[in-house]
Image (tube, rainbow, N blue to C red):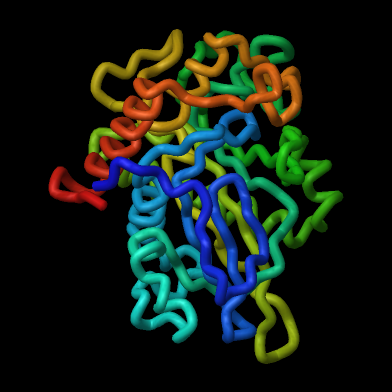
Length: 315
């Protein structure tokens, strides 16, 4: 365990393709592969905090690898290896920086859609339901309570915004018009299957998977077509809401092992979604977590890891 957060990687022999909210992506000598490195950066409401959470990137990678293996029969993924010794030679020199937080992945054309599946009524879904009785324009039965389990999991897509912009919740019809009905049907079917399998397993470990976000990509096939695969991270506390099953009671917010703790702190300090004073936050200095918030977030992420994989699991 480290006491220092890795905010940015420095791999000068590699070409940096992009820095996302969490991941630094590098080209490799293999034209078919990319190097994904999960840093300790953390974002909330699409804004990246100035300081990070030590070992968070390792937790995200460990949980993603766990789910990639467990759900591999549902849909192929972009994952190739997390073993630095099996990565291209130019990558191996950075072992001390990337071990435990890096994956070699297949290069894919990312589908411009956030594939969100909701099993419980919470977050922006609950906010919309209170106003209109719908979630992403989908009508739901009257009288549902906050955090209540939905009659069946809902596929509720959103746009995939550029960094610093907000994703926009959209209807299934609009999503299908953006990417095409055939691809939409494939993604929605795969996303529901992935969510249901993960939620069923999580419950055996004392966790409720309230909702999650998947990302998909397309890779070329030998026949000249394209194959749909799962990309990015998978079912981590960054992309999912995990609640303890013990003590679960609909009718209000739930304790959680995810970013909600950070979101709650941000709003308590004056942050308002859509009014961030720009990406720089307060007085142009950026949003910086207090030490207690860093430690509280770290604790919740590690608890999610250990509840899923066992108390002996660590990074």
